[in-house]
Length: 279
Ligand code: ADP
Ligand code: MG
Image: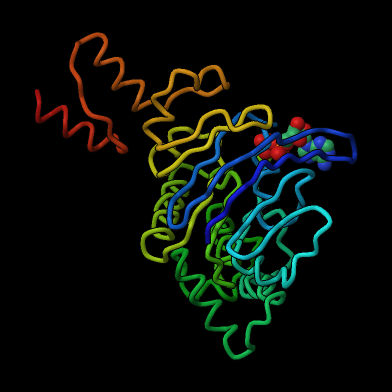
């Protein structure tokens, strides 16, 4: 699915009037991990809530394949849109409704006319995708670890098989091991299951590791956009309240102080190998 914002602005009306997004013109391409980054209050969550029409632009429109999200226009068959845009909210486990994992995963499917005889299989498949086996089906959601809860929340979205998976601050509250697991899962969603990923985070190191394309929001505007190397080597990042990823800072430092140019690398392990080879 291609997602295109055409001059989109959004103003909240309640509880207070607040312009949250101004003149957004972006394209989110299929099959990539798209990062959205920006300081708190910059408009990240507002932007993704527009994508599945939870919010409707005050100005402009959003085109997603044949769907047009626009003020005063009814979206025909909105469920055909929403079934393809899986939105995992920030701290999704705080919104668990069900005692058993299987019921939590079934819960989301109810809205999308999924054939009853497919539902159980989809539960198992979704759990498998996040790396949990069928023994989790009957476990109690409230007894899971925070990493497992996050995985179940993601599984409940994957169960209806959306083409686009949006994750709002997915690593918040996870220990480093659960975080590693989640990074692995996000990569798998792209490479094995061909999902388009939209990943919101304030963690530049994480985005640098796994994203393909990055959008930087500041005060409701897109201020930087591009290939992750382009964005993360840009000195204007500081200006928008962000620090470059540690690995990039290191690469720049070596270049400046030792006059050694090492190529940019996603993973610290690859960088160490480069340095070792050249030493
Ligand atoms: P982020 O996710 O980047 O932290 P948000 O999209 O949540 O930012 O918010 C963007 C701006 O809109 C912020 O200034 C926030 O305070 C404001 N905002 C968010 N929700 C509402 C609301 N319901 N009413 C008024 N202002 C809001
Ligand atoms: Mg937010």
